[in-house]
Amino acid sequence: MMGLAYLLAFAVYLLISLGVVRWAIRHARKNGKSVKRWGWGAALIMYGIVFWDWIPTLVTHHYYCATESGFWVYKTLDQWKAENPGVMERLVYNKGAPSTRQGDMDTFTDTYLLNQRINFIVQQSRVFSWLPVYRIEETVIDSKSNEVLVRDATFGSYDRTGSNLKFWMHIERCKTQNHRDQGSLGAIISQFEGAKK
Image 1 (cartoon, rainbow, N blue to C red):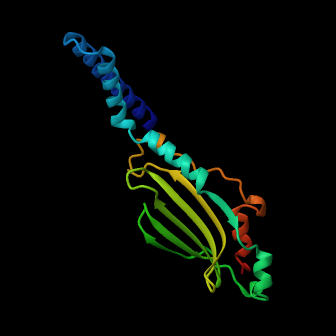
Image 2 (cartoon, rainbow, N blue to C red):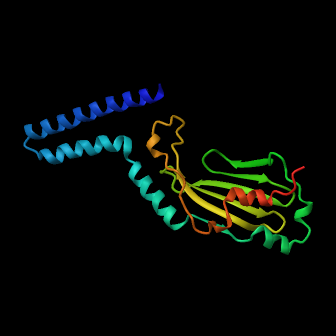
Image 3 (cartoon, helix red, strand yellow):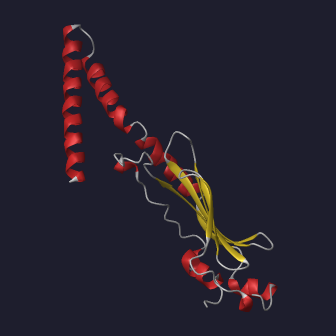
């Protein structure tokens, strides 16, 4: 039902836009102005009213995915165990991984306490205040040394207006493969969780 409402709204907007462009062309002809300039100008204005942020969002998302996204394993479980002998065997997984949130729905830091020593942190922040492009960074951290063991940085775009009218602004997270030879983030997190009791 909602999809039908979207289609109807876009059809109405398209008809209004065509009417504005036709009016601009008639106005240009009547007053001896450039028909192409007035027609294209009206079309660009009508396009820009709704889609002004779409192309900048696509370009920004692509740029940050190419330059700043990635997956890094700084220390494997075996390396961490070698530096902390006997510790992993004493760690107990916090069922449900209790968490805390600082911030709001737009910019936040969620900290999940996986066990007595290892935390999983999710941070989200806007790249620019005027575009809906978000940096999402997920890290596995040794809470005692504050050392980052694993980091996954990616970017996505979401319509946070609550209405989800701009569904075309939803751009999936970056698809990065660098440094993923150690496994997925979820698999690595499960390795560091500790004993399940």
